Length: 468
Ligand SMILES: Cc1cc2nc3c(=O)[nH]c(=O)nc-3n(C[C@H](O)[C@H](O)[C@H](O)COP(=O)(O)OP(=O)(O)OC[C@H]3O[C@@H](n4cnc5c(N)ncnc54)[C@H](O)[C@@H]3O)c2cc1C
Image (cartoon, rainbow, N blue to C red):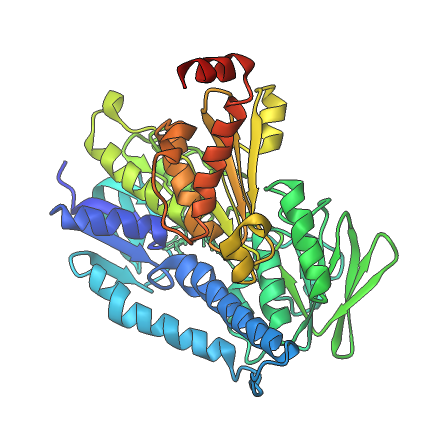
């Protein structure tokens, strides 16, 4: 059979962009289909606008601190139309940067949702296209829990939050994960009274409890109310206010309600049945090579439910494309690559590898090595009070995981990821010089502390004394 295209990519978010741009650069005939806008959720209603809003919030907070310290800060006006400003930046990135990357891709943009006709044929905009290999990169949608009364109020999700005209006076946020926490701090710092309510026992439930509790303490200091361990009984609109009633009898009120309660998978439009692609409520089923139940159809990115991060989606896109070109046994196993993740609150919180609770659950013996920012001269001098670099390692220096809280955490976690992925041991970090006085110098300090711990061995001490 001859196919119209070598590669068809459905959905052009981070995963689909990685596949289609790389494939077209390799000289393959690529069809890219996107029902909304290039860059996917990340670009238009996810990472990029949320981080831009946070940056505005952090700047505002820094300025407020200057004023409190009675430094000559002058008076900073409230940000005028922050969402419009962010939309302008996104439009610029789209027009001037992203579109050019697709120069060699045959694009079907905003012609509707693609659906499968058969395992090699996809239909969009009333026309059918065939391809030898097909990549499903359709991501997820916001999950809205079926709470009594929720459909009677105009709730926000990440899909319409960034289309507001102004920062609301007050907002209740359902969800204490990364998105809920980031957005709470951003809008709070921009003058909104933020209240988080969620079912977990601490913020950022996918991370460790200590980091979540530290963030709660920071939030309390900034006037953000956090209600853990709550079930929501009912949601109502009363005049201009939305009222969220919890199982503890509270009535949490806000001008707006943001639902950030997780993600859902919805493949109705794709008609996966026509292609024989298996899925369940946790996403499209893939093997270690990111292949679906059809050998020529791959599903990298959020749609397979494994790691819901942009960098993971891009990485999986790359791996899936490489696997499509390699015979089965030589294929790359996407699960072998570590996935760091960062929450961009202030302080930032970043993890890679195993958490302490994972190590405990597995019964793996480990040592905790930690260096706090408060003991580091550079951090003290720069007024950075909160933070630490922490690693979990074996006695022989095998690194199981790392957690960084504080300024630069998202930048610094990459080094630990590289070490874990490549099985580099602690002494390899110790012998790498780190620029001083950066916060990453604390990474080296952690490795030095690990080495000092080894020196506590009486045998080693005797040996050293003998050799001196
Ligand atoms: C508020 C928010 C903040 C976030 N912040 C971060 C962050 O800081 N760092 C991070 O790593 N991750 C972050 N994420 C997660 C990140 O956005 C996702 O992990 C990432 O976008 C997933 O990429 P993807 O390509 O798999 O899917 P998406 O980005 O969801 O792209 C899927 C694309 O497929 C299109 N599509 C769907 N169905 C069809 C169809 N039938 N036909 C044609 N097109 C279709 C959609 O329109 C969409 O453009 C954030 C998410 C949110 C909501």
